[in-house]
Length: 83
Image 1: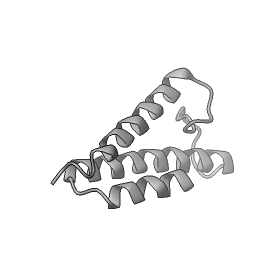
Image 2: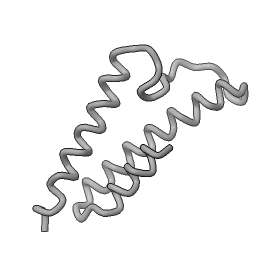
Image 3: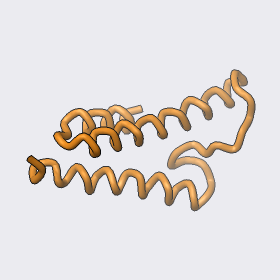
Image 4: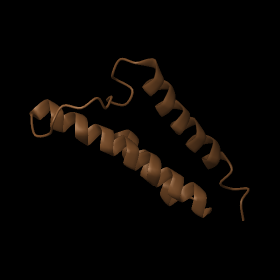
């Protein structure tokens, strides 16, 4: 949950609209995956094959989530350069 809140904080401090929307998109993807996995564990939702970000076994999901965060960090590094 701390990671998702930190991503939302990064999105709030952006000046460029694309970077702000991208940060909210990353946060919503991670939140959706988290909510579905918690719901499956509690028996509230049907069991489907959505991996838990950074915890579930599988190289492609780990690589995908890592690339999402790396792009966000790279866009955040240009925050001061965009007018």
